[in-house]
Amino acid sequence: MELEGAKRAFSFLQSAAVAVKVFISDRHRGIAKWIRECQAGCAHYFDIWHVARSISKAMIKLGKEKGCEKIADWVKGARNHLY
Image (cartoon, rainbow, N blue to C red; front, side, top):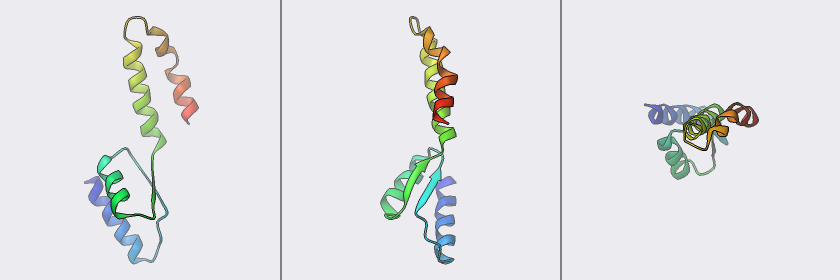
């Protein structure tokens, strides 16, 4: 559904004569591929909240392993640094 929504948004904006230079979305791989292949003049970036969330989840998981407990203390700082 997200890919179809992005395609509809692009077609609506192009019909209104609006050039889309930058597009920001969540980390949807289908949208990233479609923009890379079909929208050559458009730069695609990921929303920082989704990036921070995935990094936080990975750090929390790693912090639960033996010998890596200190990583869990850095989760909030790393997330704030991204913002």
